[in-house]
Length: 342
Image (cartoon, rainbow, N blue to C red; front, top):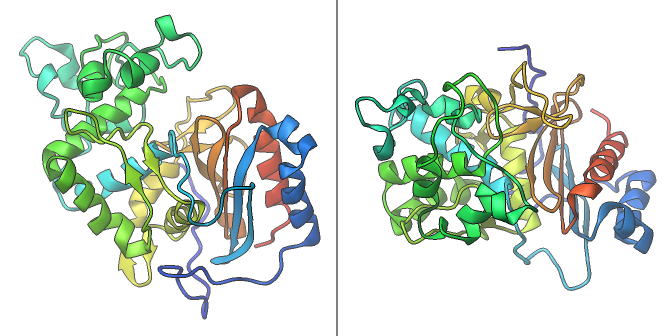
């Protein structure tokens, strides 16, 4: 494991936002102006439509801005931010000894004696190194596995659709980002915790309820699998709570939700991965050549939970952007980061 910047603890005297977010001092004027500009017509043209921006600094909510018709109670899309939530849930099961990272993944379709997919481990799946053939394309529908899985023939059983894919590379040898991989991980989780009612209850008991996330709405397929690649609607404030949990190393108000080592598992970049300029850990992203410890959850259409340990900072951005807006969005988040010190 590479050296990682430390994760800060909750500052003394700052209450945990299990019920209400503590409000901090006014944000720097430059930060407020930058956020306001994101909602203006020129900002929309540059970044795409922005639904919400929240900034949590030192555990306190210092910026909160919404588009018209959206407020702190509005549930917003997660898209692939759900993958990072899934990673945390798996961490609970690994810590409890109910799942093993390094054993062959318990996927029924792969258990034939001569099936080379038996060599795929849970850790391979979490690092997107299963080796399964997959096309993650959000535009080219006729050739896109993710579109077929979510909206076509794979929709009734997303994990079954993904698990049926053949190997394209030896397990562990090659990184390739795949929403199908996350759905397989979610089905593995389902097989441990139970069908939808039990699965959702598990999500609330071990993660959502302890940190005050009251809004999450996970979506399940007909096979009873949470579609953990894409669907966990929540308010921007609850996404911020989830981000703060990671920033605090998996701890919340004296309780360990997941071990700090599991957060490190998420945020440790794979040394051989550069995905269109981004690094990848385990169901979490990073940017290369930074010394502030940045890691982030990211979803389609510009959903971000941006976590900067060196600045004790969490930024949530929700919107309706396109892939063409992505460089400007990253630049916006990076610029906003600079206005908040350690």
